[in-house]
Amino acid sequence: MVFTHQYAPGAIDPRTYFCLYHSRDTDNMDINTVNALTYEEFLEIFGNVVEKCPIIPAAIWAHRPFKSFSDIEAQISEFIDSLPESGKEGILRCHPDLSLPAVNLTRDSVDEQRAAGLVSMSSGERALLLDLCARYRQRFGFPFVICARANSTETIGRALRDRVNGERAQERDRGIEEVKKICSLRMRQILQPTAEHSTNKL
Image 1: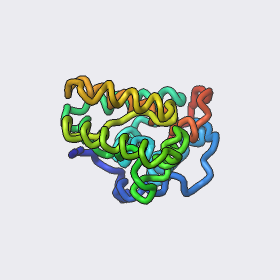
Image 2 (image 1 turned 180 degrees about the horizontal axis):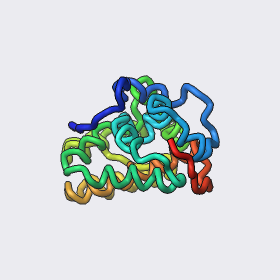
Image 3 (image 1 turned 30 degrees about the horizontal axis):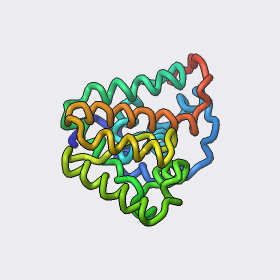
Image 4 (image 1 turned 135 degrees about the horizontal axis):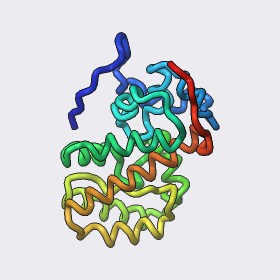
């Protein structure tokens, strides 16, 4: 996946920031605080709201001041929707297969898979899930993506069995919708969703 974006003068490549997403206490940030962040701070905090795609929050930073939580979500969604099919599939490929060892996952993914019960599956259940994930990836060329935090092992398994025989374009669209759900839940851990208008001029 190749994006072109002009970073702020002197800015550090945002790809160096995605692993720092949880490096500071950001619980319940309000929108005024977000609008006061420097480019580097914004990337440090929001760099992994879309899995391993810090270029996306980098691209929307220029749209400050944001009016609300929903405004940030809308900017991210519009950026993703504007990408060609290859770019959307690139976003999907940044997501891990389900039930991989934690060492291969970002902290966000570990937390989400734990919330869905994936880390506590039996060896037989894990083997079946990994086999289905492998079949899905082989068929479509990108991994099965689902919002784990909004699902259980049962609903994830059922969705995977239903989708593994789908059509590529349909699965690409489904996967991107799941990416947006994941992004929304990650952002809710950072922002106060009810934060309203900011009139800050930065």
